[in-house]
Image 1 (tube, protein in one colour):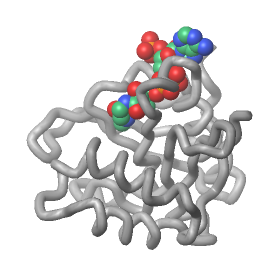
Image 2 (cartoon, helix red, strand yellow):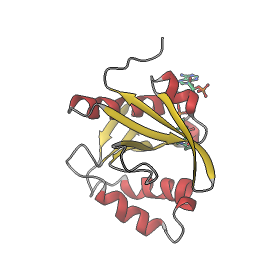
Image 3 (cartoon, helix red, strand yellow):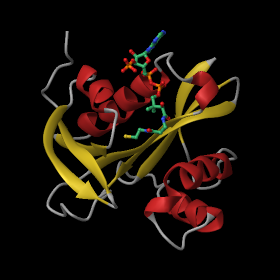
Image 4 (cartoon, protein in one colour):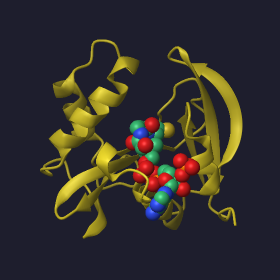
Length: 159
Ligand SMILES: CC(C)(COP(=O)(O)OP(=O)(O)OC[C@H]1O[C@@H](n2cnc3c(N)ncnc32)[C@H](O)[C@@H]1OP(=O)(O)O)[C@@H](O)C(=O)NCCC(=O)NCCS
């Protein structure tokens, strides 16, 4: 069974997510490790909308993640909040799970009065455009070129 669940700081899935996030994005934060990544992740599992953390679960096991964070890029402190940490384990990719996670986080944010969400991506612009996100600008971030994208609550998805 495939569902998206909101994670609490004590949820059993958090160490798994911390491992994914450290392996995928640890290079962006020199000096971090899996333990520090897990501690930060626990702090990002609040009962507020921001920050909050979600996992896609299949048969009780986490297979993907998404977060709503106040800041994911300090180049643009005036832009907030951000959709972040979109990740799906390789064996479950290309079956719509990331799209489901993104839509879920958008729905949580937009249904609680947030009207604009931001994200950045080095290479998944097409995926987000299909979900109704719009390119804002290309910037250098942590040694790579990334595209900052935006979605507003009143925007629809691409046909
Ligand atoms: C990027 C990532 C999150 C995508 O996850 P995913 O679950 O495969 O995403 P989706 O299935 O929603 O969409 C991916 C593709 O599968 C296609 N797809 C979706 N459902 C499908 C289905 N049932 N059958 C075939 N293809 C399908 C989508 O159309 C999309 O096509 P595209 O590559 O041409 O854009 C995943 O590859 C990942 O975790 N990568 C590493 C981390 C990363 O880069 N995260 C993004 C940071 S911005």
